[in-house]
Amino acid sequence: MSLIDLSEVSKLYGFGDATTIALDEVSLTINKGEFVAVMGPSGSGKSTLMHMIGLLDRPTHGTYTFNGRLISHMSVARRARLRRDTLGFVFQSSNLIPRLNVLENVALPLAYKGMTQTRRLKQASAVLEQIGLADREYFMPKQLSGGQTQRVAIARALVNNPDVIIADEPTGNLDSASSLLVMELLSDLHKMGHTILLVTHNPELTRYSSRVVFMRDGLIIADEQTQVGRIPALARKLYFMQRKTVDDDLAGVSALMKALSSDAAQNKSKKVKKIKTKSFKRPRKKRVAK
Image: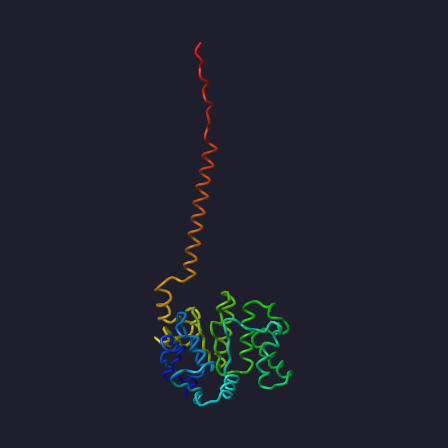
């Protein structure tokens, strides 16, 4: 039995001529234990799809079944409990509470279960040790690096031991080294049996997934099984062959500026040299006729 099953799900915003179709009859099945990466340009419907799966929003049309339970038949309270107990969220911004230390931030979701403070902190401490941040328990968020902050966000998502972890651009604000640490952590969680849904613009990150879903204009245009460690062929085609990236453009501008600066410096040097080597002759005195 599939864990997540969306059948012809659509999501519309606005009314009449101002209607925007965020999802257009999307059908998607995800089995337990999969690592699925969702790719697509901005505005393609990736985040809206994650909101549907994460029970943060309801579809305008279509059906959504989670672990055999039809979501449309659930009350608001039941959906909230299901989201709390089975889903973990990691976003591009960690959204840690600045006035709480790391341990308190991670333990916060357990407060909604009515768990005592002692048990909450003990369980949060165990999760932080699992991800290698036991020595940062009493640090404040402003004392952490970007990578550490995102790992704390992952620990907070894990504290309820969810079945599904939804990571929406979790490395978008990180450098390469920190991104690698976060992705390795998600990979380890996948190996432990968690279902991972990753939204990303970076084709390199699809190496960690076993399946890649491509979206455009609210539609799923491709769904490709892939071997872990390899970039899917379609990702290479769409993102490496069609156009240069923003980084490439910036690199080109940087190289141009360096070349212009170099030419200007050379011209200035030649001009100075010419002035220094130029000789000036005294004007001859005119002879006065006697």
